[in-house]
Figure 1 (tube, rainbow, N blue to C red):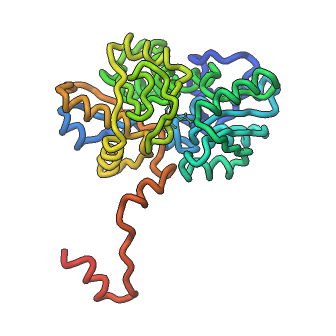
Figure 2: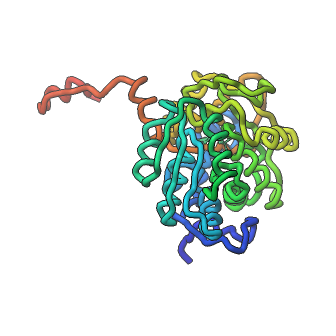
Figure 3: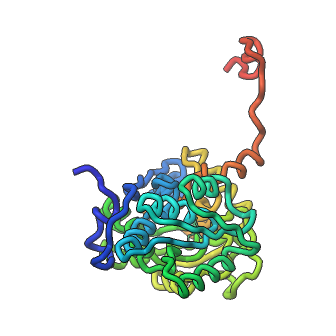
Length: 344
Ligand code: F0G
């Protein structure tokens, strides 16, 4: 049978209420891409779970199919979220599909172009706030407590249910859980979901390496960060809603949560692109973490390692165009072309 989306594929493993009415864009089923060069470098079997290939370009679609399906089923008319961008685009797309109104709150000036454009294209009412993601989340929680508007941030338990499916897919492809799972951590919904998913699926448990950006690393510092900063704007979060659960996942899995610098993130982004996988900066944090730990003696030789790349590079094009040379311009002339290309 042709693929019909995550609720159809894995619904029996998801704790969704009976009133759930499936809204799907055929999300999930993303490739687990072998990375031969990185594998050789680390002496391991390294795969990228490329979540940028979901319908709206990020892993958020896994949770959003579940959250919006539940909201529609209970009669919600409007959904709302706070977002660094990807949740906004995903909420807007699934709301559009379901015929719901969507409202998204984003931190002023800190959302990558591809995400903002997506949210607008799918018809969300986009509201910028003069504050951070964390401030936006506080506001949307309050309005959903006082009105029938449905909250679709990962505080919503159905988001976690949907996002568990990536762990299931990895186990289905590899036959068992990998030894290590490396992924970025922002509001900490995703690390929580993976850990819940692996535990539930009973195909073994990975050790989890959660990676924050150094300027936004509350779980590494052990306290909230009032003014989080990082070029990886997706994870520019100072008070993760599921911080406790993220720390539990790291501890129970015998893994850890670490921080990497923006430079390390950008370098990992380039390394992934040089092997054909272009991801947005935050999505490179998992690999950046693996590289940083390896430099300190962390050994993954002979292991299976999955690096979760959460969002597509096209979400944040300016990070590339600003830091690379712009294309050369030549007249329509063969000799001018040869001058540039050389004889190779
Ligand atoms: N990677 C990307 C590309 C993201 O957009 C996010 C979160 C994360 C990683 C971190 O996941 O929050 O579950 O720990 N983006 C949210 C948003 C906050 O609003 O789009 P997390």
